[in-house]
Image 1 (cartoon, rainbow, N blue to C red):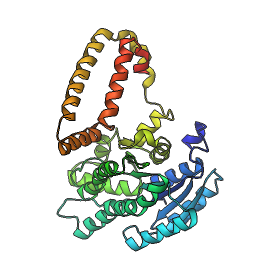
Image 2 (image 1 turned 135 degrees about the vertical axis):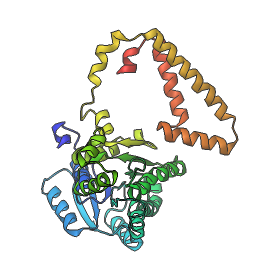
Image 3 (image 1 turned 45 degrees about the vertical axis):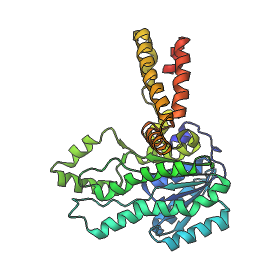
Image 4 (image 1 turned 30 degrees about the vertical axis):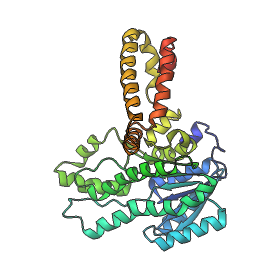
Length: 347
C-alpha cells in the first residue's frame, strides 16, 4: 500500500466516520482500505451484497487501525437512503465524511442509449449524491463534516449518458459551497483519473467502436489520465486529511498524492533550472499580471450585489480558491519577489 510504504500517519483520520458509496470494488475498495489504514470507521454502501461483504471481510482481516462496516443499499431508492441515515446515526451518532463514489457507466450514441439507461444514470450519478447530501447536511451543520463529489471530465462523444450527470456534480458542489460557507462543512470534487476497471474496459470497447478507432488508440488518447485503482482510492482518503486546503476546488487523486509527497512528480528538476531563469524579466511579468488582477478586483467590488456574487463565484470555480484568497497569495508573492526570495516561490 502506498500509505504503508511512505509510513503515512495511521491516526490521521482516527475515529472519523466515513461513508463511501460503491465501496465494494475497484477504486471504492482501495479508498475504503486507505481510510481504514488511517484509523477511520468506514461504512461501505454497496448494492452488491457479495462484493460488499467480501470487501468488509478482506479489509478487516488486514488488522488496520480502523474498521469497515457494510450496508447494502440501492442509492436510487430514497427510502433506503433514509434507512442508511438512521443506521449511521443510531450506531455512530454522526457522519464526518461522505464520499459520493458510486457510479454506473452507460455508453453509446445519444439516440441508441435507452431512456431507461439515461434515467438510471441520472438516479445513480447525480440524484443519489443530491439525496445523500440533503440527508446528512443538517447533522453536519451541528458537528461539521466533509462532502466529496467524484466527477468526470467534460462530456465526450458516445459517453454523454454517463458524463453529463457526473460533470453536473461539479456544478452542484460549487453551489453547495456557496450555501455552506462559514458553517464548518467542507465540500470539493475529486476526479480519480481513468482506471481500467472491468466496467471501464467494457465502456472503452463501446466508445472506441463508435469512434471507429481501436481500443489501443483510445487508451493512447487518455495516456495522461490513466492511473491505477490504488492511486485513485488513496487520493480520495488523503484529500480528506487535507480537506481544508481543497475546500471548493476541483482536484485529481494524482495531484493530491503528488502534493503530499506520496508519489513523485518531477519537481526535483526545478532547483537545477534556477540559474537559467531571467529573474528581472520574470519579476516584470509577474507585476504586470498582478496589476491587471488588482485592477479587476477593485472593479468587482464596485459591482451590484448579484453581479459581484456571480463574478466572484465564477472566479472561485475557475481558479479553485476565492478571489480574496488569491489576492492575499499575490500580495505574499510580491513580497517574496521584492526580497529576492525566489527559492520559496519555486519550492
